[in-house]
Image (tube, rainbow, N blue to C red):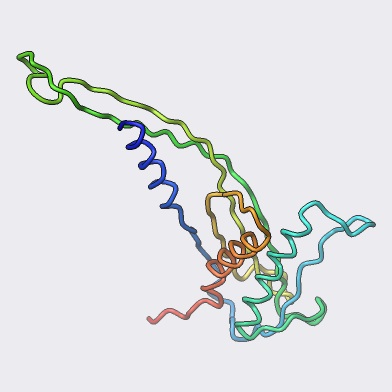
Length: 186
């Protein structure tokens, strides 16, 4: 019975994971003027191959799709209003959970008298990884960062390429939902 309770608690904790996104921007930037974008030029080796090629292409495709939906057009860097770049990082986290159970009957008088005489606790330690995606938009005329969005989530192994594309599209959609920033009513 105790292992079932622990198993259900672990399952509930893992199901609670959700994307955590945030953003910041330069309030002096006029976002209505930005209609075109280009990617920041990446330094590549002579072969053009890099280790995260598929993941890189999936992230770029998702960002391209989001910016196109917002009416922005992909152009050459020299003609772009905005330059786009993204960064990723992975942090290791540790989660320590202690479960206390109080069960059983104690026939002795005193503090443990009656039900609840036996106290048991179990501690579990779980190491996991949290991945963060950061998207930057830079004004191409003055090289000034005008908008930054980020999204973080627990990394889970996805078995198929379709599942990987789906989670990347969801993450990028979450981070880009607040671009361009809405003017505040004063």
